[in-house]
Length: 123
Image (cartoon, rainbow, N blue to C red; front, side):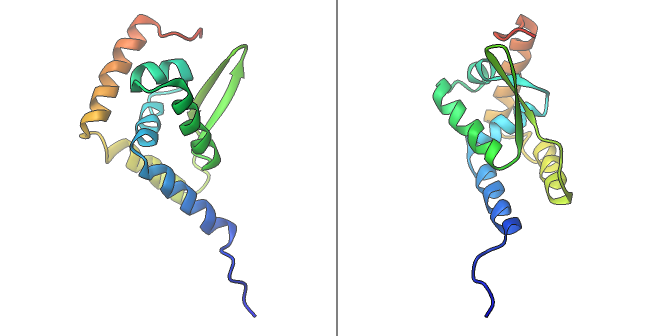
């Protein structure tokens, strides 16, 4: 008898698509295209409470779309390197498919201003 449980790859694909289905997570991913960011800077750019940002980042880590690194009291997040062709295609889409979304354009403008001011996290 064949197992009715989906295999790990199918489960991971479902998690990734759920990650991309949330507008806030999509905005976070798009911001991380510009490079590593700390939670404080993400909160300032996206204008959401820190606990909400942390929950979204935890989901993105679970989906293996972002990686975090600790440096003192700060955690910095970056896009995870593409693990396969599917992941690479999603990252390419992220860079080209959402540029005209108003919230993403506004985030990009706020990120530019934040980077000029230095942001909140030590580098």
